Length: 330
Image (cartoon, rainbow, N blue to C red; front, side, top):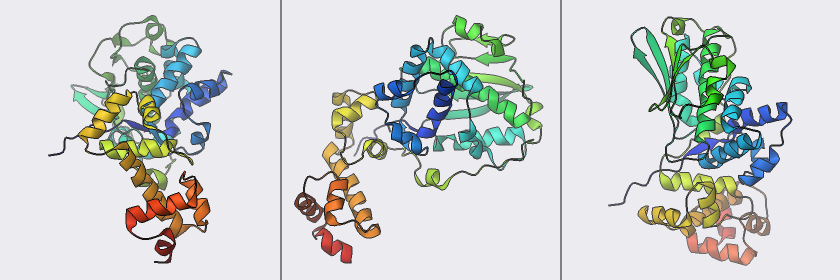
């Protein structure tokens, strides 16, 4: 019986936008930190692109430390950054509660292992978030950002621009950056908790949605839902890195926060090899290019990373039993 192997956490490239916008605002150079985290700049032109969440958190950590403090970087980005990328998840909705509940239900379209929920306790409803324990890098900065994002989403759904929670829970240890952050100065803060959460008066969430905007969830996101299995998520990671040349195993291990040995072990547990996954990706792309493009066989060979057309033709025949020329005619 095949062992269930945990999927690699994936996240949309769109979730980099608030950080990049804030860095532009303060005149900081984001490109060097993107390069250090091995995130291609051209990926930013495709916001629905799926990236390893470790890679994005690594960028946030580097950018935060490079601009003074990772926690302060997260706080300011969450407080001042653009969060339009999640608004489409909250529509259509009748009340603030309905909007936040929809966000909790559909947020995994943006982050495959995101875990948000609403929990009722007496006269309060807690807006809760569980992080990803296996990703150590960037945890504090991401929690700080998510905290302020959650507060801003409550403000947006209720129409109360200056609303502030009376109580919050944080997973991180106590630190001066949080304590001295002006938007939280009148808030009771509990540290070293099992989750991140903000308390909301339940009557506020019964308010009718005030915004008339109804952003649509774009079709590419629906078409590329993050995989929930290991092999599927690994395939999406490789596809996010691929241009004409496919990344080697070590490159993939690095940006997913694993050692090469750990990645090889997980592949073995999933009963598949790295080469087999590359072959699957090449085969699917080859079929698409042969059937849906006017590219020549030589151009398709180059697009798939083959040194010669002959190498591609032999590989395709090994996969299908027929030549690419014949497949194109079928």
